[in-house]
Image (tube, rainbow, N blue to C red; front, side, top):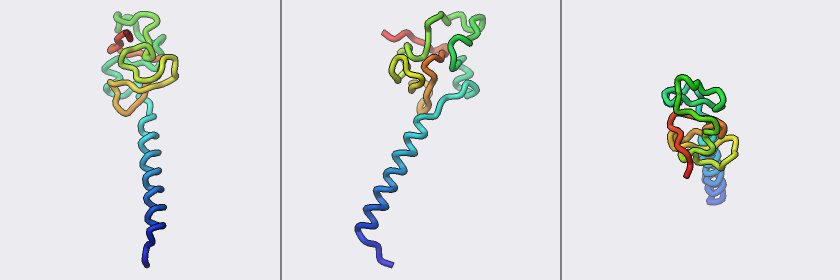
Amino acid sequence: MKNSRRQFMILSAAGACTLALNGKVQAQAMVAETDPQAAALGYKADASKVDKAKYPKYAAGQKCDNCALYQGKAGSPAGGCSLFAGKQVAGPGWCSAYAKKA
């Protein structure tokens, strides 16, 4: 069976779309509080649930979406974080690596 140039182009375009969509889906995975790195940093998806006795550095108003490490827009429900490559954190979340955005 002989393949034509048209079939090759169609299959190439379909393959490229599949790879692009696959990368986008992986980039949107949320980090879990049980993830070993997240647990070590005391990550909570809801900052109001932070154990203030265990993390005395925590102060009201500190959230992922106003942290210098947060890569999403302020006020967004989720965004990337430079600590969790390929995963997103909750905008209203918090971890012990919090650094106020300048």
